[in-house]
Length: 489
Ligand code: GLN
Image 1 (cartoon, rainbow, N blue to C red):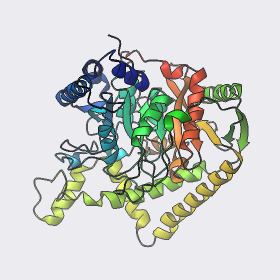
Image 2 (image 1 turned 90 degrees about the horizontal axis):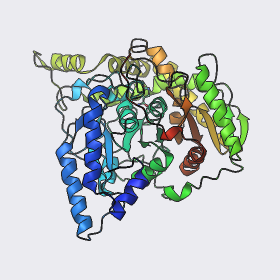
Image 3 (image 1 turned 135 degrees about the vertical axis):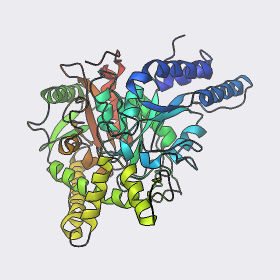
Image 4 (image 1 turned 180 degrees about the horizontal axis):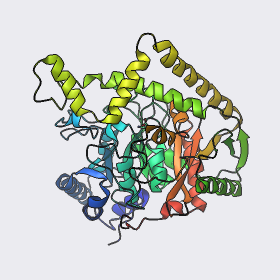
């Protein structure tokens, strides 16, 4: 039986009875069993529970009980989101043994819509990273080429979708962690406007930047995900009470007359020539759809990157202070007193990159340096917000490459933090301003690795951004290409 990957096709097939929820779940579990051992996207699979939930959906459909339209469709959960009763480790040793006491709202929204969780997905420790190599569970590999990274931090989510293990995955994006891995893995990934999707139950990295969003093969799948995830949540004080748009209806595919701004000051010699070539071809595609390409001024890419690496570690150092060996997860077994217990638990529990962020964050917040670094970072953030406002006073969306290069090789950047940080140069400003950002596949490098294009919109103009991505996908087929899993080499 042929089980489709697209969410709307899955929905239609389930509704018409072409296949059952059990068929669907069995199909995806089989692919996980086949492909996950070499890709390492899932770190926990809810095999029996998923089949039980599928049987319940089938039973309800058979007996004529009302079930929601998406009931029986599987999804994957990034390991920094709580699913009650299951471990949440953020792929860190410090949370070893911690069991989620409640459901993350985004996960709960999916469960309430009848979606079935297949398991937890690998990520960089505490979502700090761009390659999915900084995980206590070992790296995830890119299904297009096992010798390159899937991007990060939501690398497990991106690789699982790309390999066909799950049609929809939840990711989180603080500086690019949904969009950059989507670009590296040849799928679509969306960071909604800040406040659109609740952060309740998402383990905090940098609270003013973190945002949950959906990852799938197509923008249509993203829209299906957003129609489930978008909700006002009183449990998250930063959740916005904005009217929920009709995400599906917004995908008209028409972008005639839409003004697409292309920023100066981003593309330079550090950008891979294949990325630049695919970007330019994509602009031609947009033009052929009737969009107008307009050069716009935006000179804050470098400054935004620097500001992010002050502000995000500052917030992280405060958020991660709670892991003290007393309340959550890991406690060092051989400490002689309280102080030693805290020091040893943190030293043994956190990985190097997380420690680096805690040290940087503590430094920039310390008296004497607060004004010089943290306050300066906040000022740059205001400038970035203003610059975007200017841009969106003259264009509808902005288009830019998602990342400066296709996926890099495993270990290539893992001991070079600066090189790793630079891979988010095009995504980070979007988080600083809380805007919606979408990455969609825009073609391939000469080595056959996927390359993405990013569309950014004004705050809460999420559906316009999605419609531009969707229109692009009505005339391109990059998002339908599937990796054949090859040998590492
Ligand atoms: N790569 C960036 C960082 O390490 C962004 C991470 C993210 O978006 N979670 O901070």
